Length: 105
Image (cartoon, rainbow, N blue to C red; front, side, top):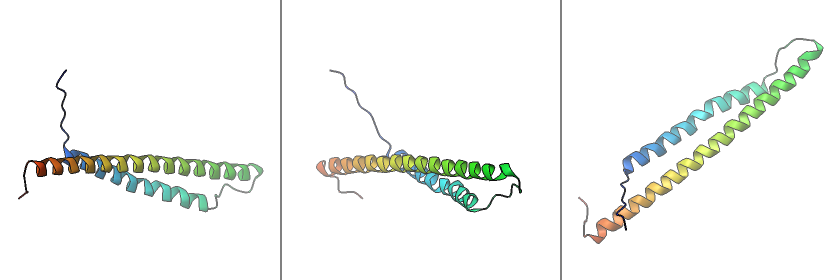
């Protein structure tokens, strides 16, 4: 049997979770920009292809907004998992310290 061990640096794990939260907040800016652009009336001119071009632009904006929404959900999931793992390690550390009689301080 081999002795396999590892160490977890909780501060690094929590820092990673914080960075994920920063990324989630950062995605709001382009999502809001896309939403504003989708609400604006494009000014392509008064010719036959302009309405088709405007429709294609609206569809592209909606697709990009949806993709950013999916990205945000994936990052939120990763942040939740990271925080859950960190909380689990913190609890184990607390339990081990309590078992060894460490009272903190």
